[in-house]
Length: 150
Image (tube, rainbow, N blue to C red):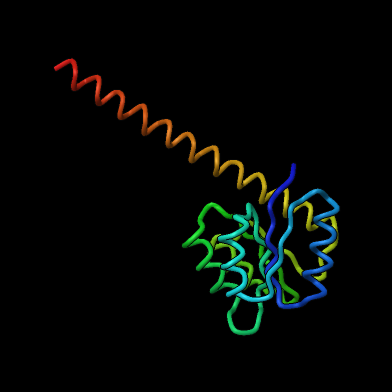
């Protein structure tokens, strides 16, 4: 579904490198971060459309990081990735705003499907935001016209 700006946040270097290589070959613009601090710097700099976020990292848990990302950057879609999948984590991630959840090691098809869903969600969010802005502008124009006709 087109080219996306993707940020991979994972403490495992091999996972970051292999995933970044694969996504780059698929035509995406990819950056990677090994920690939460590095991730927030990169989010500000690269403005990703989609983040692939490891659930378990040293220092900060992925669900906590997910919450912070969605609070500060609600338009970014997040795919949670973990080698330790359990039902509770999946439920918590989705409730926290994740658009999808992949288990490590992920196969190419699983990654592509998750990215397609995230890209569609990102596009729909952009369209909704644009429609809301147009609606607000039309409401203002209508209000101004009513004022003039009084």
